[in-house]
Length: 152
Image (cartoon, rainbow, N blue to C red; front, top):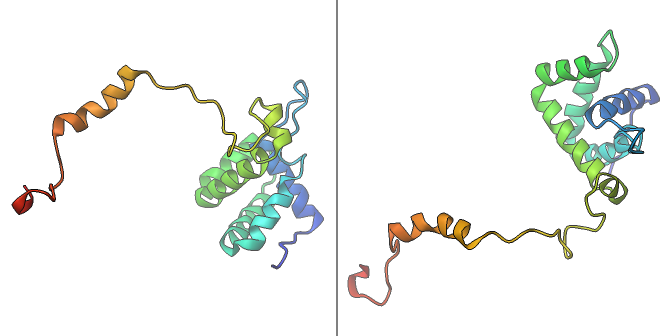
């Protein structure tokens, strides 16, 4: 696997973008995505997926040309001018940030993996389940009975 490398200036730019996508909260002691190194996670993804690497490089090239630096307006501009690349970056950023047990614990989601323990999910009421399957029951059988000659 070839490592995706970027010069320190590009890495700082990416960290600034990441901190806008998932900002930190000093009051709650929650770091932003750039602050905790999600750029490293993205570099690993880029090394495995050439399409993502190309999208990330295009996005960083566009971001480096923004005169006012990286702020909320710059992020909106990137999203509007490069929606496909931006959506992919956003998705991978969320994966990189929220896959960390330390971050999930800070935002109130269990630090354990989803499986095998899973998260507690309340059971739906019998009335709700009946409302979901009523249209299927009303439709009646929708198959051929193999035990009946002719299949009907």
